[in-house]
Length: 278
Image: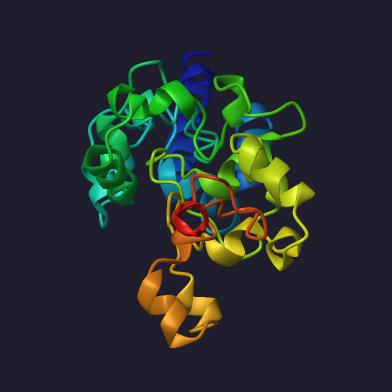
């Protein structure tokens, strides 16, 4: 019996050593993304929705180089890959990129400006050099989600009831709203919202100006007053121009040129001359 027991013990030890040797020599299992999805279904779904380059150029194992207990810290630092731009030097990536698997889905708190400066220096310069109420606001007051452009009408009342939020941007630039500029095809309705008297004169006038766009004369910049000579050259004989060198001496209503008022110097001169006649 003792001999049989010794033989069984020896066989058990041999099997144990053999199993240990086989385990040591077995190749390590290579994980792939499909292995991760078995337990971690949400991160791949997030990456598919808004993963940016993570979706097309990065695998799970490029960032998460191992899994506990083999690896103690499976969550990498963003700087492991993102380091070549000023934006990447900022601390606290997760304060804006709250879900690292959806880096394109960026949202902010209510008092965020400094992180924006790393990329949007041009807009900040416009705000600081062209003072307005917008200058005192934090970037996130308007842009609470990255890439989201708010409607001006969320805060500002349109100049007229038929104006839309898109009309605002025809004249006002968001980061310098007091510098009013426009192109060469701005509709007259945008001007009429504020300049009602001028539009009523033009509508009643029989002069050619009535058929023009406001921006034909008032080009590119608000409050730009054109020179009549730019279009009309020298329309009258030298004698008249000597006596009345300014166009306004006769045409003193710019938006109704055929209607001279009693305030026009030419009209006053004509009346004074008539009184002197015997």
